[in-house]
Image 1 (tube, rainbow, N blue to C red):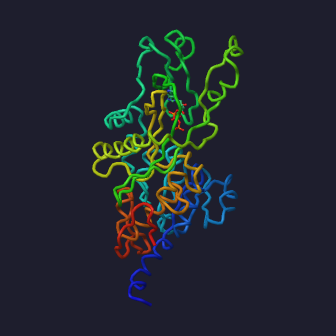
Image 2: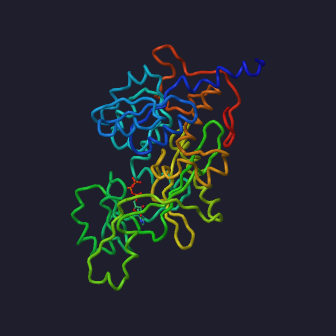
Image 3: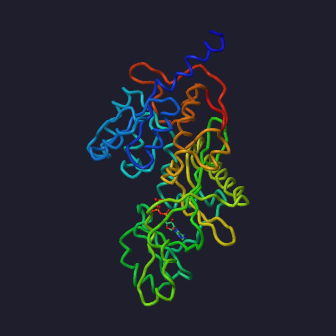
Length: 377
Ligand code: ATP
């Protein structure tokens, strides 16, 4: 064996020594497939209802069944025993309280500090406007409404319960019952909803656009199927419930701005969440107007379900990689590169333990970190 091969052998086996785990929902299949492709052992934490589904995939090595997803934090010790590195997705925020989420010490890909900024729409607004991004105008009182608005409930998921309101009278008639609930009122921006999926590598300092989608929402995306004349006299209210996602590619002339927006958000995150800010997968949820202006609706600071369209890679990931590269796989690649360069703490939240009870430490022989598109081994 050449000295070079001998030097690389222990490090290239590193992923096999660790298990990448996530909750069995949202984008778990993509995350675990990507982890397997990168050489990790994989674990899905599931409920009785979906155990069979997740076990049916060859790339899922093991499952742990828990009665409810909210029981997940109780597994901390078991995950430690199994040398687990967690990859979070949308269900982590939906099912676990912020306190429990933060208290877990299982190695966690990403920065939990960003969750506080992401969870509160007002904080999000501060973050995105500080990054120089355009956001729809916000109204606090019904009497201020001088244009069509969208009333968005706090804690809604997938646009459920959102209301389109034309003017102050319309608000009084249809939305005044909401006073008990927390909501925001935003200028209704007419345009195409484009969701841009990014990945920022703390190892290379590079941002990548992984993919994009537009949502298909019921019934707002179907109203055009009925001629306006036939809608007259029929009390149809638009609703924004997400039914599915469709791939979209952006006009190339808009791509530079999409990229710059991602960079600005990452840069600003280091000011608001010093010193590591946002890293890993995130999504900017935008509406693009006929003037080709991007208006930001929201940021998701982790992998989003729209990336499930691109388990086999996207036109954008193909530009950086000669192999199928989903966002899930890109996350596993980052963890692998971090292991290989002995810098795992750079991709994990600070709550993460860096050694396991069985004595296994998260370290390896330092090697050069490959940039995007460069296979780690
Ligand atoms: P998720 O949590 O799944 O991202 P959500 O409940 O946070 O969804 P949003 O992404 O904020 O919902 O919005 C849902 C949909 O509502 C958007 O896809 C868009 O069609 C519509 N919408 C939201 N804000 C606006 C706006 N200011 N102008 C026009 N449409 C909007």
